[in-house]
Amino acid sequence: MDATFSLLTMTGASAMLLLALAVLWRHHVPAYITAFRMQSVALAFVGAVVAWFGDVSELFLVAALILALKGWIVPRILARMEARRPGDRGLHPLVNTEMSLLLSGGLAVAAYEISRPVAEVISLPTRGGLPLALALILVSLFIVVSRRQVIAQIVGFLMLENGIALLALLGAYGVPLVVELGVFLDVLLGVLVMQALVPGMGEPSAG
Amino acid sequence: MTTVVLAAAELLFLAILAPAVVGYVRWLKARLQSRRGADLFQPYREFRKTFAKGMVIADTASWLFHLAPYVVVASTVAAAVLVPVFSASQAGDQFGDLFALMALLILGTMFLALGGLDPGTAFGGMGSSREMTVAALTEPTLAIAVLALALTAGSSSLGVITGTLLTTPANAIGPGHALAFAAFLIAMLAETGRLPVDNPATHLELTMIHEAMILEYSGPYLALLEWAAALKLTLLLTLAANLFVPWGMATSVGAAALAFGLVVVVAKIAVLATLLALLETRVAKLRLFRVPELLAVSFTLALLAATSSFFTR
Image (cartoon, rainbow over all chains, first blue to last red):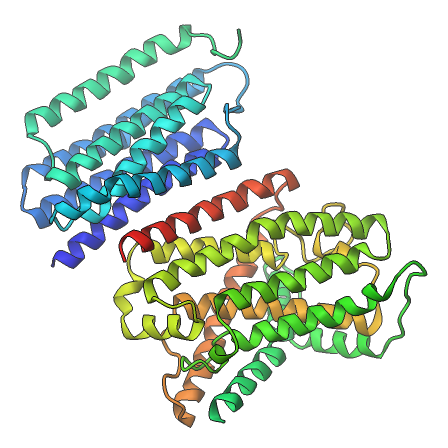
């Protein structure tokens, strides 16, 4: 039972980290949005698994909300923003692809090393995924700082949020429902505000 | 004694099967492109024909040019001895392990590149330089991907890795195994000169790698190099199948178990070769400057696999 639980959460967490890495290798914004959508689906999957095996029924609601909000509404808003974005379609990151991937590999190794003491004292069946969640947070942060386009940075930021949600799910079986709902509202509000602001922003590299 | 006979039988099996694997991939690709395609045995006929031909050798070629095909064949054959084929009680273990395998593969690659450089033609030099660029990125990836499995099994011997996986199948589930498999497959494509890194179907393309190096070879030398390339493809496919999905391999030295292992390994190679043909039909060749990006992806995957195996040991 615990072995299956541990295995399913590990698989979900690895899929999420891989999708963050996939962003580094892709060159177009629609691919970024697809990766984010799939990552959110994976997060919802992890949420449902924790709800089922950890016996936390309110997490089913959270998983459904993740699926609706981050798996459907936010990607749609992002896709619409991308469709309206004028000019050059190519992304020209500040760090080239090879270097980005190697740095992310290094960040993942660092995440494993940092979280080792934590993983040793925790006895939850989900502890195997903790280093992956931390690695996801670090890699997403790297996406935010190394991309030039605002929309790519937003995707990185949303992935960072996914990483934190994953860490909360795996480390504490989710936070109270009220807090979770507040976070969802914040994410939605944040994306809506960005949608309003981004068309007015020039590309930072243009100047 | 039995183990030596078994090792010899496995080597002979790989050596004879190799051209058929190449023939199968070519045939399937032709079918997928709505061509009729030559049958499985066409590579054997080609080898017979090429072996019988005379050789044309450049005036500028030195002894190295003559030595290279032999070293390439010898190192590939030696590498093939180490690969577990249809028996998990691996006979080749007494000769070398994972690191010996990687060293033998890179030795062959190095001499192939030297042979390409030696006559001093522009194409050969270009091919060799590209091959070394790619090899420098793929060899560590292959080694680290297999190392991820070796860490879980607690041994660098290929026979022990497959044996451990057979006895404790739980090792196979988890991110480390899947990531290592993905990394291994990408590196294998680059290592054997398949799409999307190199195009095996033509030597009339400016971005070719493997075909450019062997452009100056003809007759028996060419046949040797072609056969070594086929053997390398087959041995890497076998390695991928047996290291990551070892089920069905013979664990005892009985006739029935060995025969079953033989059938299973042929089936596994056929599945992987089918996937290879499908992939080669679906994807276009990558621009040469994007190849390092792909290889960086596979290196990162291998690194993650090894990290997760190391920390969750």
